[in-house]
Image 1 (cartoon, rainbow, N blue to C red):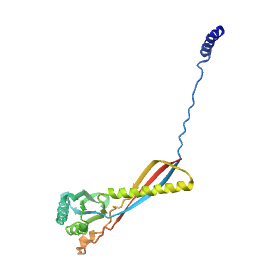
Image 2: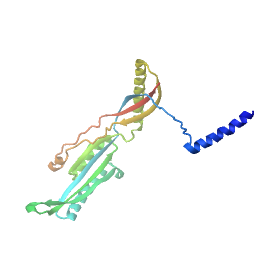
Image 3: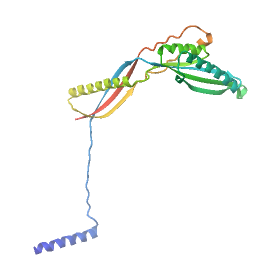
Image 4: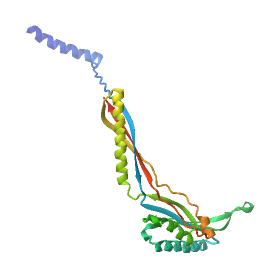
Length: 243
């Protein structure tokens, strides 16, 4: 016991002297963390045929005048006439919206100089047609009332949520089926889903129409455009953990 009591103080005294002479004893802990996850990614597509229930028609007036006021007055008179004619066939006022209104100078660059020769005024109306059978009539009465530009026609679905949900369901089912078949063939086990992405197609693109000539020629041929049906397509990308 005496030896033990003598040894302990000697040890700590020796440790104290060592650290004073050489500095602290180095001490470190190395920690390595690995987080490796193998992923398996598949895609699935769901397609649902939908019937458009609204149409969007863009018509407008473009006029020139020697002054800003002259061009503006002529344009305003004609666009008001176009709007009134559209309302008379049953289009609600809230479904007629001005989408463009601009006036800009016209220049002549003769003899190296920039001269204003007049002004060009332009305005457009976007009309939402909720009774599709009136879409053709909207174009006809607008051009008949003086519209000299028709930007295009879009057949669309006002509420796509139901069709999107159905397409999403089909897309996910297809992706999961692909994943299950691949795992059986390759011999691995699918774990939890780690990533999900989806994208829609855009089927409501405007259809270009060449209607300006009709207004100039005063032709009596009626517009005949059919909405048909559209395919709403949704694609999903799903990544699963491989076990």
